[in-house]
Image (tube, rainbow, N blue to C red; front, side, top):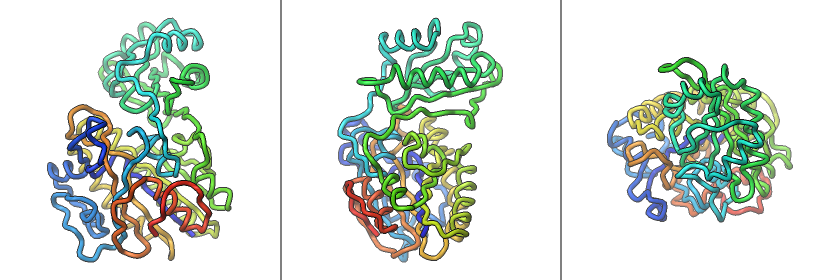
Length: 386
């Protein structure tokens, strides 16, 4: 048995009932990308993506090759951790703390004292590439780490590897995770963001990024699957979002293309064996490279690249396997600002019946569906749509 779930990070389809409360009324990531760029997505169109929302250039399939529908976020918050935890059946009542005005003085004082640094640079929400470009030279001159945040609940530390060696950067992040960002400041993730290069040509070292995540406070569907002998394989940033909890194998990636290639390899490996396997992949480029950077053209190109890879993924599935496509939140690259957007997310489920699954009331239906496929008892929220 094999179930593959791929999260197109940030690929929302608008229409969240509480979007206005989050300041996101009118956001519609895939709708606006399709309206502006008209990407060619023949495989997604055949599966039924055009039935999940009004997407310019994508016809509603007359005979869709997958079940189709939408999920509604009920958890508080619109960050990656909240979205993925909800997809795993852990729905938060309260959002993680965020810092739109930067971290308060007491947090920075505690970090400086416990990490043993004289001071920090930045301390504001920012794009990682932008803040490194702005502060890289001062960082090299002073040796002070660059601390910043985003719309997500994150405490990020950027450092040039020739200024603060990689292991020292990781040690700073462990201090921040274990001793500073706790209690009311317990952010979802502390992230090490190493970079290299010279002024005007700094480059982040994505392969050496490291996330220090808050552990889920309750079991998720990943735990339930493992307890019943289902092997759980996390591709991309999935494992980091759960602090490794419930994950048998973590496969790190360097962007969408690498994530697709490694997912395909994982499918072939699982198909060649006889161990029930759940593969959960996150494709981060939609969100990180294009949503946050207000780049609808780049978002469209990434969708086309994924669409072109889909036939190989589908062909690799053994009989009885399932492939599910969804998202964790929106990140409308045409919307004012560069934050995530509160949106419903699409669902396409290939390998079984081709039918409408409707607009579901919670992301947790994803967890219930995966558990039901494997015949695993799931006592958490959600209703399967198999």
